[in-house]
Image (cartoon, rainbow, N blue to C red):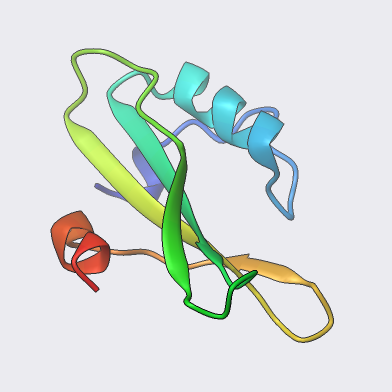
Length: 87
């Protein structure tokens, strides 16, 4: 999917959950799944915390949210969700 055909209106950076909702509203053929790593028990379990909201999508984007030592967060693109979940 080309960057220049996506509708980024009303999206603020760095992107938060509300911006992701707005992005999906602006681009009805795209849906975003979000994951995060749970290190509470030091087992790095993957938690699914935001699923597909749009129906009839043509593109599904999978974004784990990772944190650095200063508690800043970043999203990374995962091309194969099943490889991530079988980690």
